[in-house]
Length: 311
Image 1: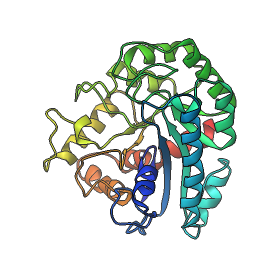
Image 2: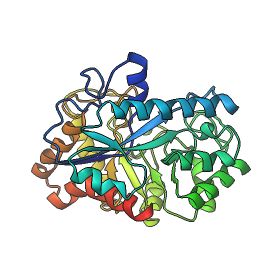
Image 3: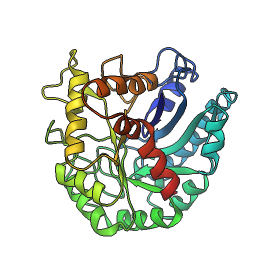
């Protein structure tokens, strides 16, 4: 079994509780995941909405240093991807491959040159916003679109090879992104509003735009984004199946991936809420009519192809 997951917030939890990647308390852990044939995990530095300016830049720099230190403690079994050419080597060595990302363009501190700064630190992807307003635009708590600075940041990210992530972006911002982007972009951890009307989810037409542009969409296992009312009952596997079926109906076979959002306050079926659990869920999907080829695409192949091609 293989797993390539586009988003987790575990690095914050590790620092907060002074844990390592081998702990038993976080949802994302390396402990008990030994049966995974290949494993790739984006590690996101999440910025709370109140951080601004140099304080936000310093916060992100601090987590960069902490992430390097944390992965170094498990260097016999994991490595950070500095260049995408590292990925195959790390996987062939049987190690976890960790890739850096940023959750919220507030990290830029309102300065365009910081796109280059974080690209040089090998952050490969960045969400433009979190839930609230920052210098680039707004998440679902406001109706404002991308600012001029936000549009300039998108263009610069494309120039330096940092993937634009539209998760958390509101509808107006998404429309602006369609008009200013020239390269495929990602929704790292977003579901569909047609099945659960939470504003964090994508409309069907937005998902279809990601499909048309050759992007990627990571499926979020947070129960709050799967059903209304929020139901953490035994039916979550069925709810995920319903979501995957709908994404496939919308043409998403080559676009779907995992973006589980582990340790981002996620409530989920505990049998799914680990890297191995998500990979093993593929057997459930096969038993319920999803082809093995599509399961492999969801679990690993789509994300691997996207990032090795686009980066």
